[in-house]
Length: 213
Length: 213
Image 1 (cartoon, rainbow over the protein chains, first blue to last red):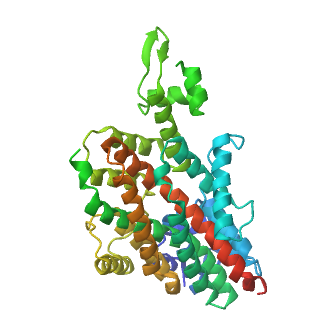
Image 2 (cartoon, each protein chain N blue to C red):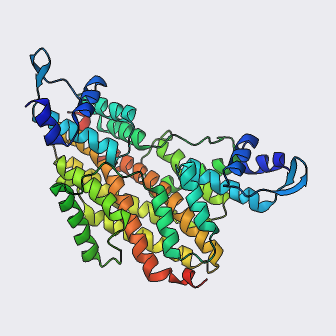
Image 3 (cartoon, one colour):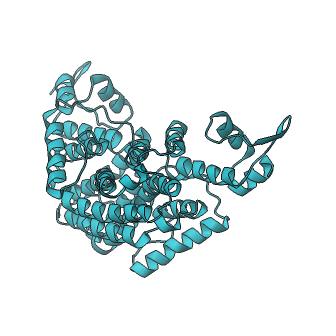
């Protein structure tokens, strides 16, 4: 198909397609003339993936490039790929002070949680620091009653077990690789959106008391 | 206390404090001289809140201003406050086409889920559109097997019930208001970080099969 059809099929403007081609996110089509190329279904799918990562996942173009490079590396271990996807959706780390006693205590709290849960997680995992950042902030703000860590860990376990099971059930390596990336990034968007809806439901039932204040 | 002590106590540089004062995020101290002001514990707490929202919550300065304005409005209904917190942590909406049949179908899927769950949620809730964005992208990418919506909804319900219960248990309106904002924003950071750790654990147990590909 020509670029105009690719644009229509993928819901992406022609200037955006040309930008992704220049940035190396989208492989070029088959040249059919001096300024013309032919694209196929793989290009449609790739463009949809790029748009989902950018628009729904909220990734930067640089993060999308990293994720696609991982997807395109044949035989990359599933674990490494998960790390790439996690890295891409992690916000830049706050200007934390690793020597700060409060932050150290929060990190120890996460490590105890991992130990208690029996989670097999390396000590360098960025998720540990990310959780420690938020927990340290909760403590600094005196919000210990909101630190329902085991409730969050229960929810995380159930969700992760089903997510990984769905990916493993695919069997075909190329589709497993895509599933890790897409499931990690778009799944987070779905889980967070549903948490907000569930909070609204709970708060509609229980929070009107704040209104009377 | 003087600004130098405020800086040390809150872990915020003096130029940053001056910036937050200029931007109206931090109320001024008590003027004690031509170029000198006296700050108190409320300023320390406020600065920690600003830093947590910026650094851990990943909010923009404009979003922090909106959240703090809501916190500072006495008697604001709890429900409105939750909406402000949700709005602040929502990424800007993707360039979605609301007439797109795929997006409409995804939105209908979210509405059915809400109906099935009996959630009391208004039709204009931004969480509905945010969930629809990610679900539409999953369908466009042919990843229906990863759409474990009821698993996400179960997790969201449990988490939200405990979160709202912890806020309601506070009783004191000013602390409930802070709890809604902080719990919504930092709680999301904790839940997402723990989900990544739980995924790593599951993937370490079950995904090495991708390595052999």
